[in-house]
Length: 282
Image 1 (cartoon, rainbow, N blue to C red):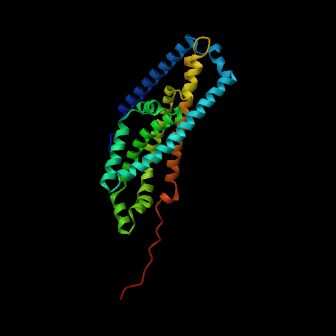
Image 2: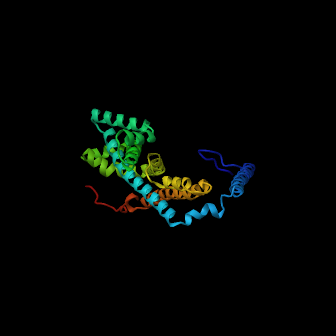
Image 3: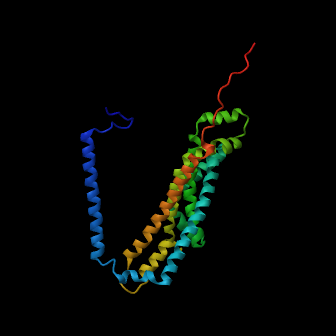
């Protein structure tokens, strides 16, 4: 007999056959679409030697590596500052003092509503700073405000009894946050934190709009400064897998940290001693 689930009923034989047919049809459509794209690429000569020859030059390789290094530098700086700003704003939003909580709320809501590109251009044009600080500032303000909400939601998601029990033991609020709430909230916050860091990594490509020499800017220089037919498609086919690989590596690292945290002895249940007969009361 088929067992029912809380979300859906387990399909029967006819439904399973329909699902198999739907899966096969979707796979055929996807393969046909990929085949059509490859046909267009070959038909327009995107895999000819002339279009891929520039990538064998040492100067172009150094340009791509330098752009990749600038992208990683901007991302690393923005990630560290975003986490720090998010923790500071989350602390303000969780404060018991109303003025501090109100100020942190206004800052978070304002920078969450502002487009990243507008903030980058404002810092670059109005404040007249260099491209790297302008890019990092825009990414930090936006992602830090989003991470502040992630931190606040993670702390509030911990069962209320944990907080009350810690206060009953005589712990101060700082000790409750440091030793009780935050360690438990990190496990719930980790996927959202990594997802936001992936967004920050992809948003570093906005730096080419303010002439920051990052990875996308290097690809644009290669595609626009060569004398023959512009190799936009080969440049995209070189840059896109590297961006996708960096984002997938970051997601894999998040999964590895989560698995390590689940198997950590600190997160496991403590073994209780077996019950033994005690001294009888008179």
